[in-house]
Image 1: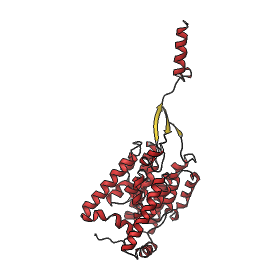
Image 2: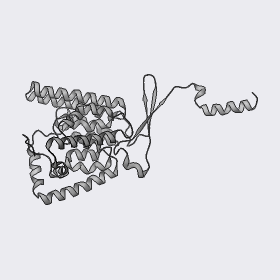
Image 3: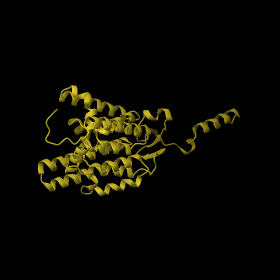
Image 4: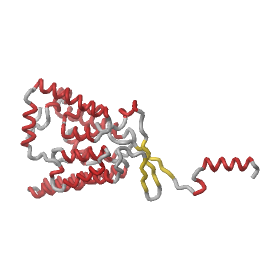
Length: 316
């Protein structure tokens, strides 16, 4: 137990999942929780590629680690399907995670976990659902980003409604939440390239730092409103724009990226049904294969070599 100036806005399901940490002090429990969550996110986000590593240098991740938030573990659930069992701990974010995944295993585990945890928690404290809904209703600082200044523009992400990451961004923007930067962490997971990961981490970090400055250093209602607009513009909108740059397809088999001096082809490799549960839960996996420019006569080197060998046999 620890003192807090805020009401306990988490459902009883979160406390059930936190029981294993109740045997430790607050400092040790926080360190264990953050350490295990970070390991899960690092393991899941780098299984197919290392390009998402910039998210670990973002203010969104650092703030999550600082206050021992669920955001790190929830983001890891995008890549590790069985982690969906923890989604009932924070329903507003858990719904967004399930909406942004294409893994049937994640959806089934999340639904079963919700049923079990809700039933057990109601048996222990029968009145908690009504009390929790009352606290959420009276919490004026919880507001969906869509209802904040400039937030309605985020609906443009639904133009890519076939893509799971579009629903991830849309549902996160539609759920009530605070304006703290740790809420931005799941959005950084949609990066498909290293450049996108750097871009999302940089813009979200700048927006978070600007919002903190406006709220703490300037103060006042106008500064708070401006800070919310900054979070929308530099945190949520870049993620929506990245999704809009992609084709409106559920899984893109092949994408081409034009660079200054080289060309990279990103090939999606589908996994067999038995192994799908072990990969990224929500997004396609890409492998960057660099290609070098070739001369017109060298486009089919194997075919050309066979012709040369036939010519040499003929004595030409």
